[in-house]
Image 1 (cartoon, helix red, strand yellow):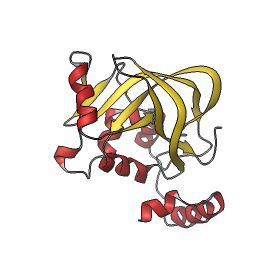
Image 2 (cartoon, helix red, strand yellow):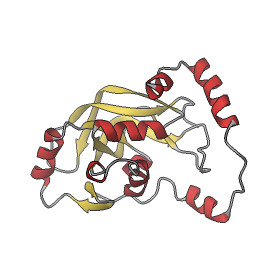
Image 3 (cartoon, rainbow, N blue to C red):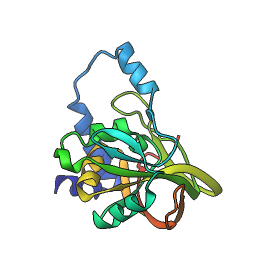
Image 4 (cartoon, rainbow, N blue to C red):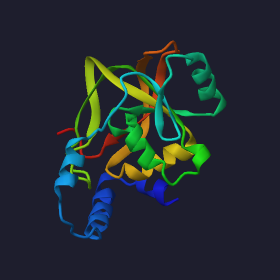
Length: 195
């Protein structure tokens, strides 16, 4: 319920929530390792579509039909992944508290029409300026769709503090594997806008 309450906050309510939240964050030394971690955002991402299995990325070009069947069988949701949510390392961190059998994900690379990605107008706790999408008619954005379970989507949502969550109706995503185009995606979009 707390997550749903946070996601439902309007901008003014969110500002008050954010002030209280970040006031509780203790001061810390920003080390060279912290800087390198921030500069590495959005972290290593495979070139093609992959399955996240036991924390490792496995290319799915070898048996795409089996993977596509798993998407339907597991009741997964198509989450637009344009930043760290397309990184096996980041997904591994976000899924760390899930039970071992529920950490596997399917990430399909492809092209999204009429959107682009840029830096969000806020700094993340770890020091980077994370990404956000924005409308850009005519643009073809190379990105990914993470097909996630309800548990996985909830885990990701907890980490996306500065973002609105919703559906991109009318979005058109063409996968790099032989799959049906996706016209309705879920997405996190920065409350702060693009920098």
